[in-house]
Every structure is written in C-alpha cells, then in structure tokens.
Amino acid sequence: MNSQPRLVAAGYACVFGLLVLLLLSSSLWLGDSPLHMQFEARLMPPSAEHWLGTDALGRDYWSRLAHGARVSLMIGLFAATISALIGSTLGILAGYFGGRVDMAVTFLINVRLAMPVVLVALAVVALFCGSLTVVVTVLGLLLWDRFAVVLRAATMQVRKLEYVAAAEVLGASLPRILWKDILPNVMNHLIVIFTLEMAHAIILEAALSFL
Image 1: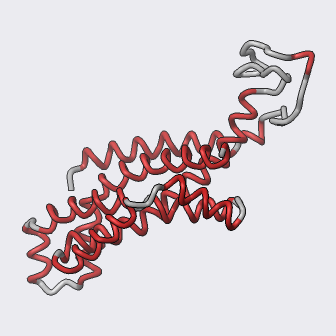
Image 2 (image 1 turned 180 degrees about the horizontal axis):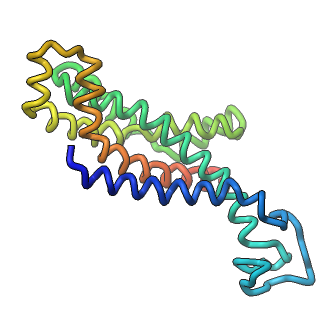
Image 3 (image 1 turned 180 degrees about the vertical axis):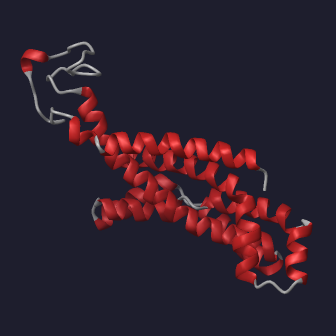
C-alpha cells in the first residue's frame, strides 16, 4: 500500500483529533456558560474575554459554538460509524464475491436509494421521539449506501491484483484475505466517505431539529 495516502490520512486524523480535543476540553477553561446572558455585554466584538464576541442577548459565541459542536460531532461520528460498518461490509462482500452476492447487495442499495432520507428520518423520529439515540440510529441506518457503492467498486479493482490471488493460492482464510489484503487497500476510500457522511449526518440532524 502506498505510504503517501497513509500520511495524508494521518494528517487529516491529527487535525480532526485536535479539533475534537479542543471542543471537548473547552469546559475546563471556558468561564462563560452558553446560556449565560449579559445584557451589558450585548453584541460585543471579538476580544480576549469573548473570542468570537457576543450575541444580542450577551451570550458568548465561542462558548455556544463549543458546547453545540459536542452534540453535532457526537451525532456525526456515531452515525457515520454505524453507516460505515454496514456499508463497508456489504460493499466489500459484493465486490469480492460478485455474482448473486453482488446482485443482492445492489438490490439493497437500490431500495435504500429509493427512500427519501429526510422524510423517513422525520417519520421515525416523530414516531419514537427525538432522543439522541434514536437520531443517531436512524441516520446510521440511512446513510450507508455511499459506503457500499464506493467500496464495492474499489474492492472489485483490488480483487484482481496479484497479491490477493497469491493469498488465495497459499490457502489464506477468507477473513484473513478481507481483513489483511482487501480492507487496508480500500481504506483511503473509506476515510473520504466517512468524513463526507459525518458532515452529511450533522446537516441532517440540524434539519430534523429545525423541522
């Protein structure tokens, strides 16, 4: 596997990790509550005390951004993880085996694409109440199709390479081939789709909260 994509992926992971750490640890050094109103400090410009200024009610913008980002990041991360587990598994199996397995996975992808995500998610959330667990689960079960499509195509390309055939000839087990030979070489695609679907889940969560 080429080392350059690994370095790029590691760089993105470090930047994302620092951002998450900054947001999660903000309560240790943030003095203002996101709901604390200071009418004498309304619409203040950015300063050492208020990094991003204050709103019309005197609430600190950075404090509100940091606390709100925790919920959004948690929803996006867990929803994208559920989607990645489902879609990656189906896509890799379809790309590796082909035939009837590929036809079955393609049928599931088409069924999923026929469902309007916002309407289905809105109906389920309204039916089972809008708890955080329900929102994460619903979004995770509705956003796996892109993982399956991309990893299916990537696995079909990797499946034809010599080292996979060599592993099969040497008698390597199926889990070993999928885990050691296939997955590391489609990981770049998985990381890219994961970041996109994480942002997609955050946008959908904001739309559901608005609706």
